[in-house]
Length: 227
Image: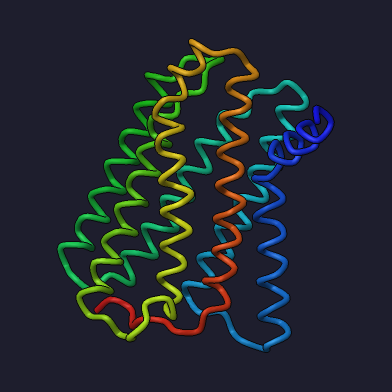
């Protein structure tokens, strides 16, 4: 039993790399086999998966060599905010939604700068700006669902690429928000093993979300981009 739990624990420790990597490979093989050119949404999802593979591998390398990898997580939040803010700004139809995306992104950039230069106190990772990033992406995703429900371009929403993309984002960033917002508190009251368990949960949700991204990538129905 203990050996089984150890295997599961070791897998979850690196699931933030395995999940995106397998999903990325499956998606690339799908487009190659079907001879389909990825659309804008596909490129965004592939870019996100590739970013997770590269940055999470880099973070793991630094951790094994006892080097601080906190800057990798800040970079991850910054890049994901940029690509998803850009994506939702492009596809959202209503002007007020586009304005909210711009405002949200500017607030995030300002707050992350404040956190890095004034609030960050090594060796504890300060996850507040990363939590804000997750919350904003959840907000962008919910606004896109509002747009879809308003216009309803298909009878079955499960046919839409955007639905599965949003489902993946809500699962991953929704769960990440609660983990990141409470990270410092849990670090203070828990042992390193407890924090490690928390990150394994995070990795599990990223792996599951990566699988849902594959469903989004192979879905063919798209909505018209924002006007």
